[in-house]
Length: 269
Image (tube, rainbow, N blue to C red; front, side, top):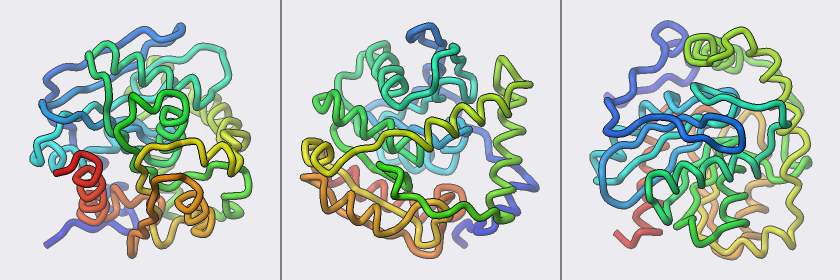
């Protein structure tokens, strides 16, 4: 029976499963912060970038399938989240994109596929804009690229459960465990004001992209991501059925199959 946790009550009761033991893990120094990574396997590289206030442990249901498919997987904790530290510099997707490139340089990875979830999707899009030679392709899941792409916020029990999980994880992993609310506000400011791509900006980002969204996403307008897919030069749109913004945890089989299709397309497998 395929695993399902649509209302995230399993997450609430049990948390996330542990990540596999990593072959390589550690910190890299990047513009005053220490950025944490976990690297697994060999083969064609895939970078996993989590959503706001999350951490690389949020990919626990994806890593086994990606490793079984023969990919090298690098999971990164974004600046100020998970194990990674921050400076007093405001959060920004361009800074986070530079952090990812620093990790890739440390691992001697010249070019990788990027799988981005929410904030991680925008970080991947900035990487594709700034350094397309470093991005083999981008799986862009569930984020807006301008301020018109979001729905009015409506609190739900599912959102409450993921938020409580983020708080528990932050307290357990961060070097500043009492700073959740402060970092949450700073990340929220970034989300409300960045990246603000115009159509002309998007038209210049010429890397292969799968733009994906859960059918019941709580935050992002479907028509916004359809616009993104239509405006990027080499992109397609995929709607993931019966899931929301938290698809990688709710129905990993649905999410993982979409990611593996994307990887097969860009890597020609």
